[in-house]
Length: 544
Image (cartoon, rainbow, N blue to C red):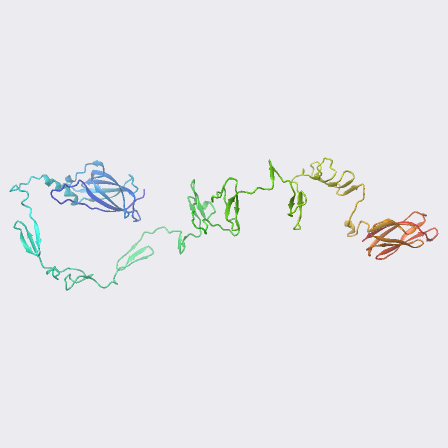
């Protein structure tokens, strides 16, 4: 328990009337203070009071206990003799023969763990109980009249009279006198005057000699007096400021050693609420958290938000200012079938007006669609709903080996583009029963920008007519025997033209005669006759 130092003020009351009954108790008052000198106010305290015979360490002839409550000033009042007796009998009338002492013990927590506060000798006042014995003293009365010894005193004006021949005296008149007679007041230098009308008492008029207290470190001094050193206490880690108190340079823990964790303020509830914050302001938050560089709040556990709008199945939403409320979620456009969801209409990504079941429109210039498989068994097949696979796009794993084939099919072998990716072959196969139309150039890595596809081609008869050819051939004509002109749109320069004779004598040779930006000329020559001769020929034009 805490040790208390108590200041006790003993007040003993005696009864002086001869015929009054002396009460079997005397009063005891004490002011209870703790070890730092602070009052113990409005608190239950327990006392054990013992009467010791002969000395402060003598035998207890009587012992009793009291439980009382201190007032606002730490004061408690007891009646010694009316407590709960523990040992002996309360008989003060028998204490006059030898010295007696009163010992006080205190438990400031109101229990029975008493601490001795000291002992002091009982002086004359408690021995008034001994006067109780005169009530039975057999004293003879000479005239056997117990009332004729009583006198009365009366005052008439300034005449004070005592009955039964006691006499009369004249009191001094109070008219303007000081009633001191020839006697005056004896005082020291702090008072002036002698108490008479002519020289009344007054306090020394110099008020500058008052004493003042001052503190320097642990030294308490009074001016004109002495200096005492106050007990040194431990320094507080808290610093006072105009806005309150603060603690800088360390961590603070409540119910927890702050050295164990990284937080500046650590509150551990151990089964109770760790932090309770209440605020009635309509504009200021109860708790404010801000982190300009990262997470402002981290909650490891469930979060309960109750504002009156909460309910089963509701979702948390906010207004433009970030104030949250619980709202019933709107019905989504997707339907659920077990663990699957579906939508029976067009779905648009990047468009608000989709024209197809899945309509994806790129608005950023990045990849439009990406579909990936996480392992070697992934396949991607886009085909018609029937099992004939008459049209499909296929990205298929080859027997789980991690080798994939890519194909676009429209019924085998009507149309097929197939790339088989193996260690031995990397290529592209185009298989079709009809023509393959390429709308732009085809290049080879070794030939740079040279177009691998013909710019123009055709077949010209010996009469100079175009039998067939590309649409960019504007005209074919015969200039003379064995000489022809072929006109081609946008022919330009930098072309390679291959001419081949066809039909007629085996001695006929077809060759390129000249080339212009819009046409070229061809001659057919009979090497046996060594002369021009008419002959069919074909040609192919490549642009560099």
